[in-house]
Image (spheres, rainbow, N blue to C red):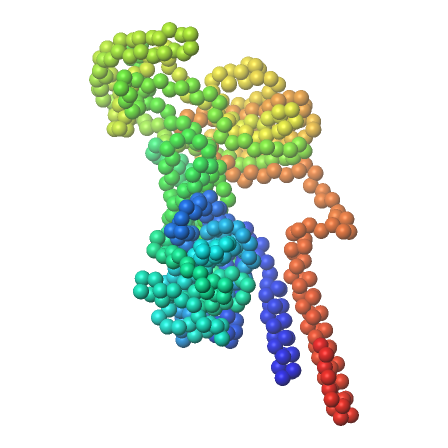
Length: 625
């Protein structure tokens, strides 16, 4: 018997060795490795899961508010974790009591996560955080179980403090594998019997088990009929074989239509029919679109935007077969305003827009428009690539049509302490372009109130009393005149728009030191096409004009900031970084386990020899471990 126990100890240590020496993935994805068992340990399986950061960010930006029990259903996202369910079912689907075995395997996975009171989380968040409370762990377990085809509910115990939650699993029979000696717990809902499934890691719970303290508590049953039906992407999962890395590229080009850009790229390895998600964030909203790859692994999608502003675009591939999914780099898009269709006749300017009661429109002065601001430190260098696109090209050889504008009388207040102006506008017949959208009509704007919107895209390095920043601004005519005439302080100015062509990538580099700032622009061949001379730290700004931002978009990528002195200072003997400690953890764990294995083996051998010697002397053997 002792020899059997010794074999069991060595077997357990061997399993732990396999877990700890599994190499950590260097990919940008969140990687997770778990083990699960079926039929009480007869089959030990290792599950590899990879989560692209974009999917984690997407769910992190969703609402986590719970106003009532029914709101918990929105956190159940079976499609996002479906590959995990499929991997487990590859083992359990052909077993006796396969649904119960599948549910128990899911519980085994969830039990390996740390208990932490994080509040309601989406399953992707719990997977990445590797922790959660009873609510978060139950939502993850329910999502995987539902993805595997099980009929599940949430069981919420609200009559106790603090409250508690677990999962209810429908089985048409009494659980076979629940803890021996304990009566399984069930609840009847809609004429179905749901057996409790405890997701917290305190015990090795099986379907039918639950805390004994809950036996007398009447719970609320939360049905999961209104769960998320579609997810922007899925995790990647494989069984007993680590996932191989993959990649995805992203690019952007102009589209031959109004306010539209083309997002394209490819995945590697090249798969046909691969699902690609395209995430677009404006800071206020987080949207996604989906498309599929062609035979060469390429994808393409036309993105229509409705307003000027800053957008962040990232694409993601969900992976296939033995390959993990991947995220592309993030493109930052600065979209300028749309031009107005404008013409002049009889001393008046006309534009097209949605008619007001007086059939006129006054556009406010746009002023300075901030697209992006990034704080910087001194003694750093920064670099990024950018391209200028035209968001909606001007159509040549436009045909015209005759439109009659009805007469009207209107008044306008010109501001504080200014007289109100009243004007009589006669009916007029004018010639206009026929490509104007049909939902717009001619609006009248007096010429003396005409206001231009030809703001200029500019990259600005700013020094505000030692606080540096990189800014992307649209400067209006007034601001540009101050810059060019030297009325905006000590400024280094470069009109780079003279050398920049549309649809070509350029590289911008700059250095910021205690002595001042410098900046250079290079084309794709590495040729210097523009330079801002260095100036001292008392100066305020370097301004580089890129293009007129009306009907244009500027795309920025590969933003890199690093210190000018890249020398790594040696650590003191008692200093270790967190990453170093984590990187050493598998080796330290391996050493400890090897020492433990050798120690236990030596003790066993020594005691065995002592027993044999005592048996020879007819002395009862007593072993103290």
